[in-house]
Amino acid sequence: MLRPNNIKSMDATVKLILQIAAGILLAATVMGIGSLLVTYLTVQSINETAKEGVEQMNRISQQHQAKMEAQRQAQAAEAERKRQAQLAAQTRERQRKAEQQARAEDERRRQAAFERQYDAPEGCENPESERQFIECANDKIRARREFLGTYTLTAQQ
Image 1 (cartoon, rainbow, N blue to C red):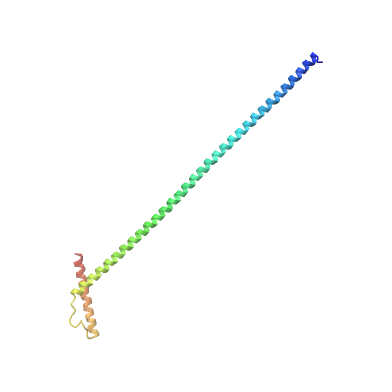
Image 2: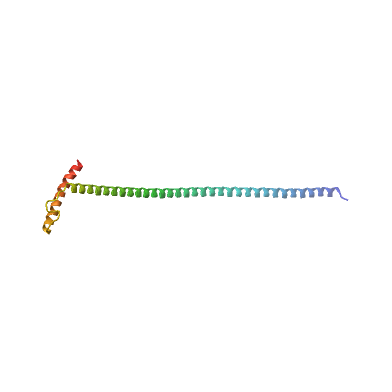
């Protein structure tokens, strides 16, 4: 049978075992909480790093988009400049042709006016010699120059 001294000693042993078990449980709980805290802080750090990485990628993406937009605008401006230069060249060419046609028309009118008023000297309708032909040609040239000087002055007034 158990004696009271043995019971006391057993009680103390059970008490010690329970205290050790409680200490082990407490240590395991503290270690588990510590491990959870370390895991939580690690996850928080990873999340913060990931957030910073995403923000940096967004900034880089925005910079790239801004650069691409600037290039697109520069290309559009260059294309517009070329289009405007081409339009200006076409306008100048049309104007040059119109002026050329106007000069040709003016010359045609002057020539027609001269031919209407020019009266060839006698014998110049059918020259009989080369000398007479040259004299008639020279007469016509002098008359034309004189007429054009007068015609230009008349046309400008």
